[in-house]
Amino acid sequence: MQSDDSPIHINPNMDRQPKFIGQQKNTFFENQMSMRPPVAGTVARGFLNEDEMFFRGINAKGEPVTTMPIPVTRDVLLRGQERYNIYCVVCHGAAGDGKGIVMVGNDGNGYGYVVPAPNYHTERFLEMPDGQYFDVISHGTPTGTMSGYATQIPVADRWAIVAYIRALQRSQNAAGSDLPQSELQRIEQERGITIN
Image 1 (cartoon, rainbow, N blue to C red):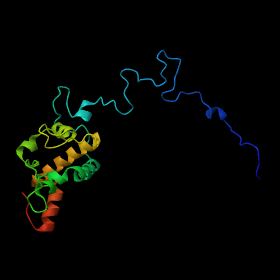
Image 2: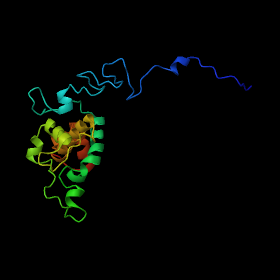
Image 3: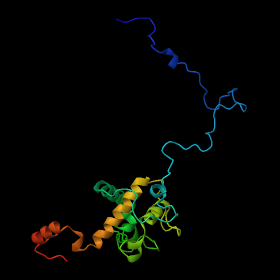
Image 4: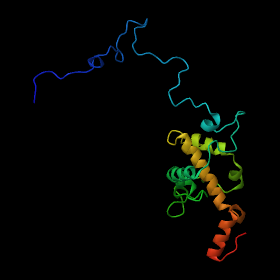
């Protein structure tokens, strides 16, 4: 049944709250501004970033960390692979050899880049600490040949990319001893080969 009566408001005080809208005068404060600056030292929720190892890739001495500050799991590696394929592969190549499409082009001549992307499988990059990879992903290189990706790639994803780069390095420089003996035997039997 329809009614011409006004609808019933169970809690009408929520409809008419005393409040100040931005830029509105507020005589409670000396400067009469209703918009108040945050208290000194206020940090927005989720932006405390106290953990130097995780958020900056450095240890207590300010040096790049040598190991990952997160556990490297299969999920982390898969996430790193996904992010690497989005942000890094175009320059650094699918194998991490510096032969991405931007560097070599469709015709093998590249697209005008004078400084090639590095090959992660050289001694210099194999020995580079994890924190230094994280820093370069975050801030780019001092020469400007690579831009920083801190605004595009969240911190955890940057570490996942570092983990994936390490997996790429391991895959290209693997030895038979890196595999469990049972897996090594299975591969050798399936392919009829001997792996050293």
